[in-house]
Image (cartoon, rainbow, N blue to C red):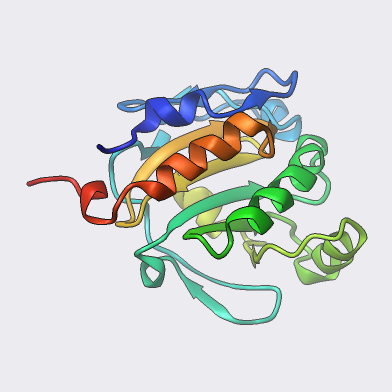
Length: 198
């Protein structure tokens, strides 16, 4: 059984932010600058569910190179965010709980910071909020533009083979029992059963 974007649509209890889920067959789209500033997004762009996630390389806070293609074999939850983004701050504690719960079970929670001042502002933020999940720096928005991220936070779930399972726009509570059950079910699927048949 292969879990799809539809499963991802229902995995969380949403905060009261008018973001939108993107399900299988749909894509993220361009929105107004005002929507970007308020952490909102509107439908239609580049990351397509059930298609390969665009490859990229970024430096982490500890100056280690991260290559997306080098992380096949585990599920990746990419969270595009910034320290100045109010909705992003709302979901950080629950993202950290998700990270701590599943980090040894095959799910990697990875933050991608859009802060133009990079580590100078991200490191103090991480320390102040007791966050330990890995964070990559994208100060020039190169990767964010490649993924056509137009609202923060935007979260993208990638399967073990590098395909996009789902995209969420807006802040989420990542630590609800329903969310944890979703990821437990996802991780319980045997690796071969998760592969698409040709």
